[in-house]
Length: 224
Image (cartoon, rainbow, N blue to C red; front, side, top):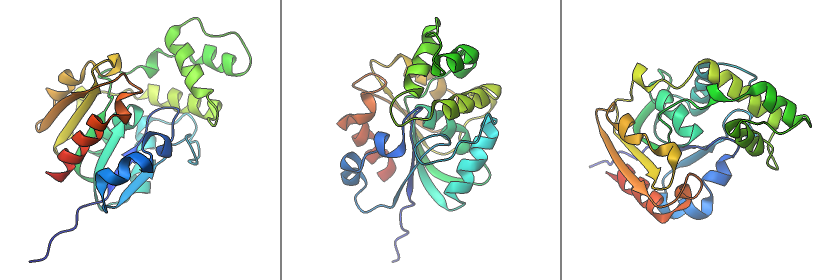
């Protein structure tokens, strides 16, 4: 009997991060064993070029081209999960199983005060709005390209995350930190999915991703 090889696992990271930061080899090599793994940098992050203020659909097209048509398991966190929800339904991508961690049920980018954010990264006053201030802080962390990141946010906001418009049909694992307010709505998202498991792990939005419980949940789900 010939065993069918398991598909590669593709990882998408969160906003203002990069693939090697969210999905380090030291944490994930033991989880996947000898399975093939690809860690992508989102546009405007890490080594990936910025696309400007393009729509979500254009970002998804770029990711689909980078991934290719062969079957994969797809794992996304935060912004990576927001994109993975729609990427899993993209005609150019074949997703067997989908893991979405730290996913917000709403669209925060439409609430960002982009003029204030651009002024702040150019040396102007800190934004009054807390969300915009948080985005400026994240975009300005060492190694990031603040202007490119704000362009990405501007483009994504023009085509907001709309889970009510359609849901992935393949098996989905939704993961959220017990202390992560951004993932508080995953039960609402789960109600839209035909084949879903929901699991909460220790930690807030930053810490949950790096817990053994998160990795164990992914391992078990992808192995089923």
